[in-house]
Image 1 (tube, protein in one colour):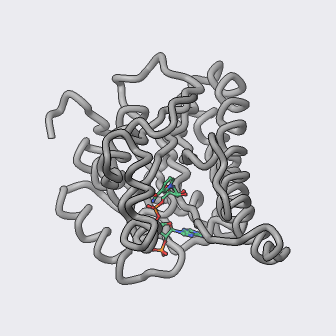
Image 2 (cartoon, protein in one colour):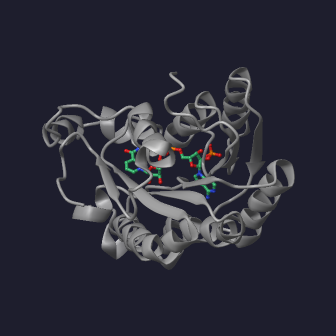
Length: 254
Ligand code: NAP
């Protein structure tokens, strides 16, 4: 990768970095020169593979098992990052789950799990990283929403509601934190070919899903990571509170 995008000397924390978009982002950041801390929740094998791939870039890396839905786990993640690297320059709140539930089957437990993972799991790392960023008087936070948060998603109302909330959270924090040199932005992906969407993208719905995307295909995880890297980089220093659509033209709103 060209050094035009240069994150040398920066420390990036990415939640859910063992697989999918988080993994692609962790690798892009490392290739751009950042040291990387990433979390995962259960997939030890995937976390180990990601760790090894990042090590091959020559950057320093730390993998922390931490459930983003639990404040104590997220605290462990942020404390470990600061203990190892002394600072946090970039935070990507990427970890999330996408589960199906018709509204009449939306049990309190299902609802709570999605809200705790996707929404509280976005709030928690931000609340804990911001004091460090304020002390540094610089920082860069990138949240991960979804087209579901912009246009809604049938049978995934809990998921869509959390992703809509991530957009309002981003728009609230952007002006709150910009005076401290902290930029807050959001990437809103459409369909991305990862483990999360694999069954939908290979199942009966495939044709219908792809026909609603002007580019006619799902994104790769790297195509989302590229947008996240842009928002984390020196190429976007005047971009604040942006909801960056990366959806192949499927949903044209901010
Ligand atoms: P993925 O392939 O399923 O990977 C999810 C990642 O999040 C894994 O690293 C997983 O860790 C981690 N994770 C899940 N629950 C966690 C928890 N409670 N605590 C900590 N880590 C947790 O998902 P993806 O497709 O890359 O999605 C990443 C983000 O993009 C999500 O926020 C998702 O909503 C959003 N998004 C995805 C799509 C899509 O089509 N894929 C579209 C729009 C938005 P383990 O490996 O340990 O399980």
